[in-house]
Image 1 (cartoon, rainbow over the protein chains, first blue to last red):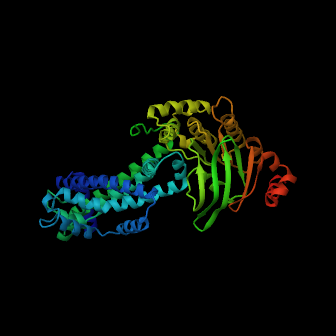
Image 2 (spheres, rainbow over the protein chains, first blue to last red):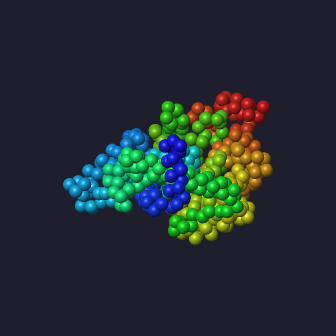
Image 3 (cartoon, helix red, strand yellow):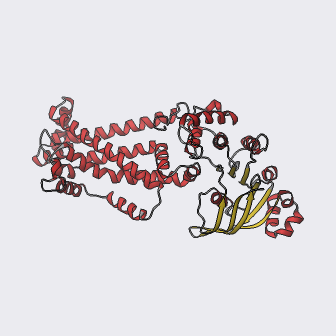
Length: 245
Length: 240
């Protein structure tokens, strides 16, 4: 057997035997990325939805900046967050460096531009088509961005999944601000990088498989949800009652 | 009669397009005014200016304080139930100062007026075009507007749906049991509808008003020819 086949067999054994080392890392990775995606999407979608409906001086420059940030290298984010959180940095007093919080913060910074840029496009398109009807009814920018974002919630769900994908698959930022400390800040991507450099390919491959499986499951769930939604759209009404006074 | 709307030398440029050029007109309360003209002539733009959706570049627009509602060719409904869609339209109108439960009660009544009580809990985005337009009409009806704008409200509907909408609008603009007469301003390509609803017809071409006549005179070929040859040619083309 060659190295790849060997490694794959061992990786499958690690997964099926519920190797505690592997599942701890996978759990931590999920925790960090899910938290970052949740916070980042909340901020990014709100910002994107507002930018989708609002017109103001400097908007074009802001959109250019936002689109530029889409290509933000994760190591650069890691470096900047490291400098901010280091003992002598402006946020050093928080004591977050090499912690779960630092990794979440770095991933939030990576996720916000993605969520904002994608949701801006979604909301801007629907506002261009129908926004004036809502303006005619008396909806200002704030109300319109909430209504239209809510109306496009299924499209925005895809944005959330894309953001989660971005955060769970990045390695540079979490490596720098988390420090890849075993049992504390080691996540799947940093573990893969480390195990590969050490030559422990089965563990690296097993982690890679788990990573792919998680993203795959998430996308499958999303597809199932959309399928269910399409089938039940006519029959099951939704309501805004929760947030309208 | 009281002047409700007054436009003086209004011009509007949308991008590089001169949408309205030197438009002056006065509309009194209770008038039913039809805006007609070819596609892209400026009818819809003029309606949007009057509804406050576009700011003018030049000229003066005076609009008396009154409750307004506007119906679009293709109404947009949120992916939620019909009742919420109508109630939201009322709740958003700050002049009505309705609380959510009051808006819902009014919306319920409006739905029964347009015959859509049966779909009040159905997702509005899944209704047919005709039902969505009736829903939009319910949203407008519930506001009890003094000024109603209609932008080709039946243009994308099939004949039965068109008839239903026409009947509802007719009911809405009829002067009976209303303290103040409703003013109607609508854009339409449907000359039959113009004859049925309008008391006055304005012909627009390339953003300019070329004819502004009482309906009977507008449809009198000789009279129209005297006032505006372009409007006469347009009408000939539409009726031939």
